[in-house]
Image 1 (cartoon, rainbow, N blue to C red):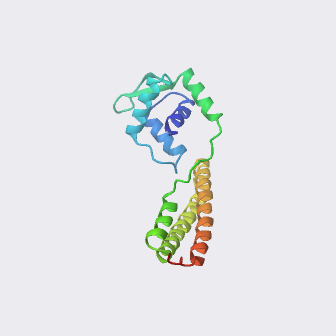
Image 2: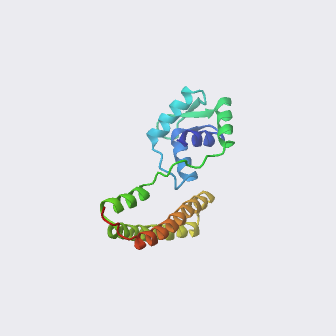
Image 3: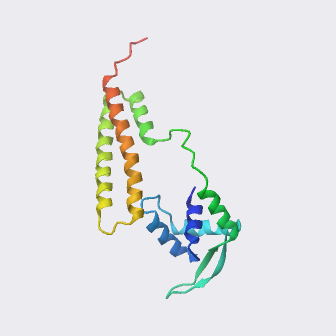
Length: 178
């Protein structure tokens, strides 16, 4: 999971409390899997236990006390190591989309698989249009735009796969009984 390392990255800009880290995460990675407040504080606890962050004070801004965390030297080293490591491409295909198509073919036959593929293609195309609009919205940040570009590239790849799969399934001949 990359959330602990993203929190280290956010702390590289200076000490922050958990609530501020959560808001910065949401602003910085607007299309990423949401990170709950409980997860932020649990992650900060693990990062503190591992010596990557330390409590550096408390803030009170008209509300409850908030513990402020700062990056340690070890935390900075760990962040630098992570940023310098190339991500390996995923070794396995793990997609609900792929699994549903294969199961539809096995369990229900080509007609059901084609119906599912057509519905999925429609949903992907709608999401693609929405992301394209997001990029053009006034006030879209660079984070919004690059996150939308990333999602668009993945949707485009899925749409290419969906089109090829629809063609293959449509051409599929029923197997001869054994």
